[in-house]
Length: 113
Length: 115
Image (cartoon, rainbow over the protein chains, first blue to last red):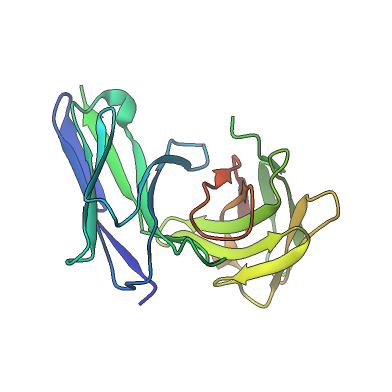
């Protein structure tokens, strides 16, 4: 019940296309859903995060869509660029507790020029 | 640069040995988290310390232990090393320990290779 399932494992998108990464969770107590971006040789870094009181959050070309009833959320990268090539991790946690963040298994995204 | 430092960058050792990984959190951050990242396991949370005290525990093996010192730096000790312990070990820090809604800032990681 603590798992966050992420798909696909890897994704190749043409430059200018839309990249979509999906995640699903089971624990309805989760109320904070961040996405982390990791470039090769670097540690993950927070990209964007959402709380379940909204269905969508947009920051530049990055959008999180959240479906509370389905317990699913996704990351959309519009106008994907080669510089977006990285590994993306979705995650979930509970804001009100000292609980750990549960990370998905990661998606390796490659943007073809 | 996240402001979190980790040493060493690379570590090569033999099975059965013991190693210590070190992490210095961002200035002002009280919480330190340790993660293990291997190719087939993604990011696995190991343990969290807040202001010197253990706050949360994940899938940390009994052969592994950690501590956070008064100056807030942390060390992860790995003993009786096995081949399967080869991985990237990340340290992250956050402002507070209360709540999973705080951004975590990750260090560059230590790559451990057990031969």
